[in-house]
Length: 334
Ligand SMILES: C[S@@+](CC[C@H](N)C(=O)[O-])C[C@H]1O[C@@H](n2cnc3c(N)ncnc32)[C@H](O)[C@@H]1O
Image (cartoon, rainbow, N blue to C red):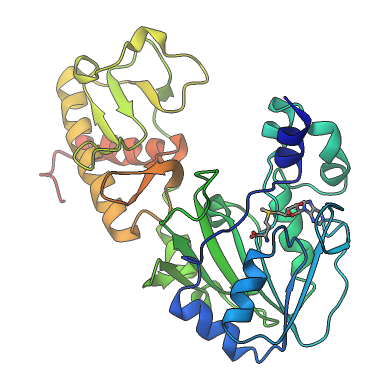
């Protein structure tokens, strides 16, 4: 990789060149803090600070580790100076441990992974930013399903529009203040729309009980799963008979995450019922949770909605439920 690209990757230099992230409720939150200084500790080209000026901030402050940029130098993943009456408005660098290694830039960022237990440096950035009372951060949407404590948050907003010109990373915006809250008091939005509390979503998670034999990526599997939405809204994630899958299933490996074959202990008749039940249960789950609990997948569908991936734990929980149901002999409830 050339040096310019390596620097872009290791410093996460993807700039927020448009302001789709500034939804009305985010703007309202910023104003409600009565902060006087907009502060970006990962300032880059200063795009977010330009937006801050536009919405009325008279004072701005930017820091960055890249000495070629015009800001004061600071390593904000190690510490962020306290600035009174400020609100942090930032988009920190994102880089997973795994992709740093894959892209050959791990040595540049090793010191950050050494001082924390996170697997992505954006989480270290949140930890440092939370030392300030108020903040708005644009971060990967995978944050929602991460274990990172979310008690200081006021809201989480999934942004479906494309924010960056040079990466399709699915993102969300978090707003935080100084108060510790219950998850029932943390609001979740998709774009402008309020969906429910974080507490509601946490209760909706499907957790497998592992009381039924379900084996993923088994070449003997009787159920095929396309675990990712296609760009065609008519062809979402679905369970099906192996012969219905337009993919060479003999290439399934232990590590396959997008298309898989699943083995269960069940007769052919029961398998057919499990497939029908699972698709209905998944449809119902997606509708009730507005897809918030499914992993975001790069690139949107043709209708502008975010593509999703069904993780195998949730898939297992759905299959267990379907399997249990077929044992009861009842009619489908959905
Ligand atoms: C994703 S860019 C965002 C820039 C800007 N906030 C925006 O949204 O356009 C992240 C910025 O953080 C800077 N950066 C990366 N690691 C840093 C560190 N440890 N301390 C301070 N800045 C850092 C990069 O140089 C880059 O400019």
